[in-house]
Length: 281
Length: 67
Image (cartoon, rainbow over all chains, first blue to last red; front, top):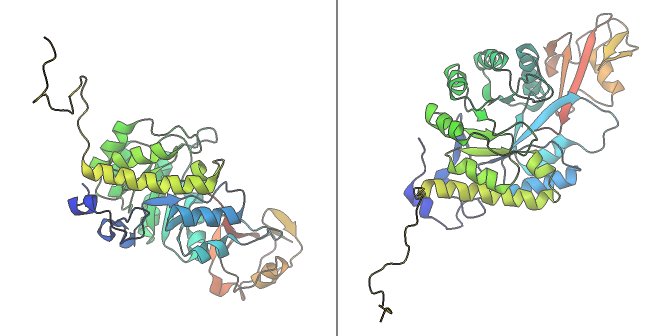
């Protein structure tokens, strides 16, 4: 289910790129690409490109989403320049697409613009919830996989749909914790854990992360990575939140590998009773 | 006339995409740009020679912040 080793769980040496010395052997692997960071960063919502650049650096993220929109000749600064300077890999999304047809065309244009086969596939069902349209999503995923794309679909927390997406060749699945931008955290942790058991590809918790504890929970549930966008970009201090998310993802990953104690309804003394003095007389 | 990013633009039939790019301050070498004409991707290698039909719907796209 996971390649997390006990050696990695115990290692605290600063030999990797992670803030707490994430061991290199615990790298995230998606379709042959290797990332030492398990935090994916969305670029939407940052008040400025300067803040975005600083947040990327503090998050440690190596895989960063980007959208494709009509060019604005009056736009100041170049997002592409900022992302290239940061040395991150681009993950173009198909945000705003409501049909498989539009999503496929958008993915092809993104491949042309950014020279990458990676695509975060979003096919949205309605404006109010921004929930995925399962039927259109599956159709688009199949078409893009057939066209050579490495498809990372934004999907519901449905283990069956996740399995169907992997069956058509998706390289990872990105189930939502709760609606995009809602900050509601993980509404159905049991389903997220079921998805982790249902598929053999990386599971990236996407959407709904509100704060660091949500990201840690995702990792404790066994997710392979977390994607955060609004939670960082719209925080009062995005750069500090980027750092918090980085540590939360690493802590959650370590806790998952370390193996938590079982939940009990009654107390279990952590101090032994042997040698307890008798003060009754 | 063509429709460039949703608005009428005074390009005549037979003009190339390169002329359209120039009107936006771009060249065929500008990074992070993609073009669709009538819902078809036009590869970068064809931008200098691709000629426009009357009423062509041209979308010139680039990177924007987005999750």
